[in-house]
Image 1 (cartoon, rainbow, N blue to C red):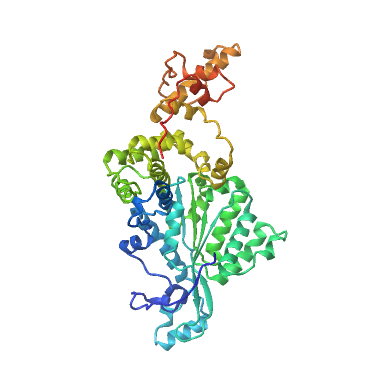
Image 2 (spheres, rainbow, N blue to C red):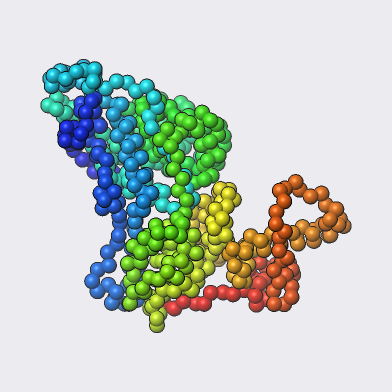
Length: 514
């Protein structure tokens, strides 16, 4: 949907405490000035309403109402820092770019009897601001950035400035996601298409059927962005550059730097930890990519901020009788979400969805566990890694679970994929914090069996040169006396989960009534 164009209204520079060249810069004067934390909270927060009588509706109607939680946004303290940096980037970028011709600037300055040396916009001598926001999938990066960008009108139309004709359309911000596949040319074409969508133009058709490569499209991108007066270009899902290969990824990073140098347009990059291998590919590249710095968003800790987040979300219950929030419930929700806001909201939503209509509509720690093990079984094996903030999460496999195409494929599948050994062990009762050590023991046992089958004593195998670690515990045994690995190996035609299920060692969650 094309955003509505809003007539630009230049603020009063004296009232806003502004002085210098910005007083005669129509692009800069139309941007909102810094906001207080209270203003950010009021405008960013998205709290769905529970209307009178809704909790008395039939169960089928109340289950549907829980979907409103998908729109829940609670500004947390780190939102304020992010808002300050993003809005500051936009303002700083415009202060060095005055769309008025130099002669017209001089006329306006002279008309007010001011010194031209103080009030004429000089060409910038440094790069436009750049910022990177890195964090695990699901921690709310895109939601926060989009909410903050929406504090600024996206399209502004100018019909005049200080009594002189000035007809321009100003595009304050644009956000484009890196494509899941393709190279530099694909991303650049996506940027052209986004500009066309926002402006109602059709420029991308000039390039889509041409044979121009990515580098050959850059001059066209610069020309169009100069015309639009873009305040900031936000590139999301930057970790996908890794799939393009070093050459294509390096080319795109050079393009972003070129935009900041050539037309002084700020660029913000958003991605997961996997993107760091690209962003930090060299000292010069890293320095240029983040003039405003690098923000690292980790999952929340189980602290006062988490308590505040849960407290606000807890008000949104469509149960026949709301369940009071207790510390035990708060801790259980953290245990099964590990502070990832997207997962926490989904657990809370699906817990209500599943318990509505039961004899006792009540939220419990056991219900949270059952919901995670059934609705989000793919997430369970990652809990121990998240607890340790394990670097293995940077491998990209965790991020891939949040990809839209991955979720789509899971929904389309006629039969659920067989759970891996990690999931089977968790279903068998292995605690998440013990999973890593149990898997290590199973791997050790498997290596010994492989060496024995080859006729080579395991002890004679040349050990890999790895740092010394704690001795892994012996493989976990089942009530039958067999190790879990032996039990699974006895029935190779079954998945690990099914083998344990058939032997009676899998503990499935109790069914939750509707």
